[in-house]
Image (cartoon, rainbow, N blue to C red):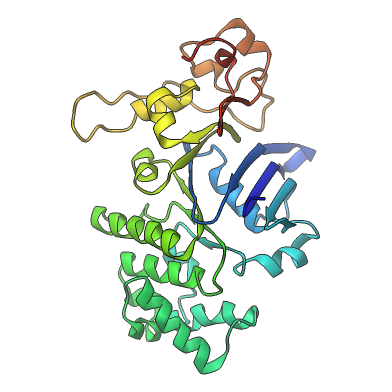
Length: 320
């Protein structure tokens, strides 16, 4: 049994006139303690919706199907009351905008202590002492606990947000593009911090990003999402050298080469609208190797090697 098991996760959103948008489709992955998975893809591919569903943080207009288990316990079964017991204690999250994640009129320390009190982890002076320890763990002085979010730089706020996420010693940490608003040096520092904490605390980490270079620095494995579906999942080494889905290959080709040995290629076209029915393979209109069957039949997600799956009709033949 894995620490985190996500099986057939699906998300629908209700929209006006009685329609529904199928935003996440049959997402499956597993993580053991200390493992790190990158969730990558273009904007609108369903990455953030997926991890918000794992936390039970989607709005009332959303319907979630499938199972999310931590140590075998389905944390979504039973609705909000059940999810609240696990949220922040077993599964915690670092949000994309640290400034928006914090209450601007409360001190950093108060906001780190609050989840400890809610989950009966610690109270009073013990909780305040632990908040200082957490801030020092992420490379900040304990005195930051007395400051307000606007008094910190972007990099410091993001570190404080990580400290807040670790307040109840969670087993799984979800990070939603945690370096997007930071400068290059701060990005590198936060990424190294996430990797170190995962190793030292045996944290299972899910890192959401559109940047494959970021994933390669932190994660051993990656799940590539397109149109709400995981179209390929495997080790970074396998995906880089012999991707089995055309979209994965194009994502790598669209990533700048730091050595300048190849030109950056753009991905033609745009992702499909999920409020309209998708027939066949969702990537078919943008794919240069599409076959007749791609227009008619959605490709199933097949295992192409141990712990490596892809959804492409070409997997019935030789590798692309």
